[in-house]
Amino acid sequence: MRKYGVIGYPLGHTFSPQIHNPAFKALGIEATYEVYQIQPDKFNETVTGLKAGQCSGFNVTVPYKQKVIPFIDEIDPVAQRVNAVNTIKKADGKWYGYNTDLFGFLFPIENYLKNIKSVLIIGAGGAANAVCFALLDSANIKHMTIANRTIENANALKNSLDKTYNTEIETTSLEHESDKKYELVVNTTSVGMGQTQNQNPYNLLNSYTDKTVVYDLIYNPEKTELLKQAELFKLKAINGLDMLIAQAAKSFFIWTGKEFPNHVIDKRIFYK
Ligand code: ATR
Image (cartoon, rainbow, N blue to C red; front, side):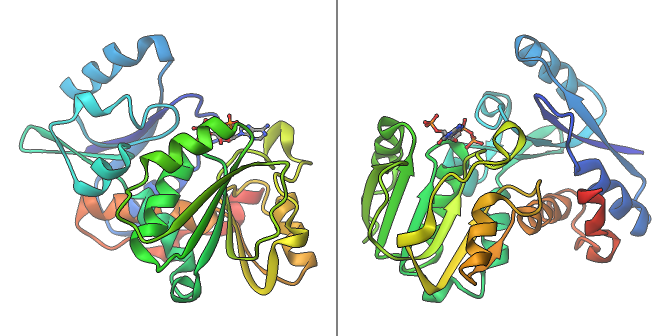
């Protein structure tokens, strides 16, 4: 029996076991997927213990995607580029690190990418970093605005992005509403879930055209305030569920070499 799991903290609401376990079963793979919630002060010893144990691979989530890197023997170029690992595979006694978040993020907007020239990124943390790299690498972006509560963090993200991109990047604080129009707006902050469920991180009012796609990485609630506003303006609104499933499917492929059986996912489980 092979063992997989997710490490992170806190992990109370993770859906990953409900994605991977039915998939293993459907394909007749003898494996289990478990949750390893690791307290921050126990991180090093627990990961060392897991490495020595029977596990064949892990997902890594907040807040450990960077912290896990020193434990890995070889890191693939995508993970190296964003300095974050969300998938680990053990093979021939070595640990290999990958990042499937970029693939997962792009999957739901694949068909829109070629028309996206101007983007607004809300937030400037780890998720924003991955989103910026994914977009700059995969689309012909002419203009990017990074809007964040703390302008210093937006500037730091801007400075970390490759200067060789032919993209104008501007930073702004969240309250300052831009008068630019965007073909894609992405919320990478946690504003819209949990205690901020009733808040909208950004007022779209002056920033959209009838072609604007609004993408919130939050998947619970199903419709954040931002997505409700997008629908009010009759815009294409995408939540984070398809990204969650797509990044998991890619991890599954890395571990098993098999395509993820999409039919095992009943999306209603996420909203019960
Ligand atoms: P992640 O790795 O999930 O992106 P993170 O690195 O902690 O998490 O980044 C969280 C992002 O959400 C940041 O852009 C943060 O803004 P600050 O840089 O000002 O901290 C943003 N964020 C979190 N809570 C917020 C809130 N209540 N209002 C506005 N922005 C918030």
